[in-house]
Image (tube, rainbow, N blue to C red; front, side, top):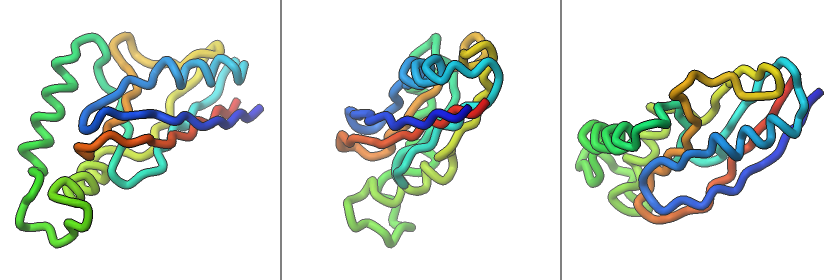
Length: 137
């Protein structure tokens, strides 16, 4: 059994967006007792992470850490075609993930107690991001 579907996620600009519920709905529709769910973002300036979903301070701290690690407007970068957050967004995407694999058990995502799936927008401006979800079992 294979089910594949796309999500269209509107972002508000830089930051994370919890997409666990939307992915879980697709997994439930697949009706797979045991298998794997793959989540893939089709963009080079956004990424996917599995992170803590209980305390929003974790997401803010991740943003703060990446702001220090890969600052906007760093003179190191030549690629600035779309502004000072352009190349830093690409670097942030490469340092995180564009694809995740999550086990499926009893037709549900088998995430840990405090884990959620997040789309991480790395650009300052709002965007609409395409995320593909494929369930195999």
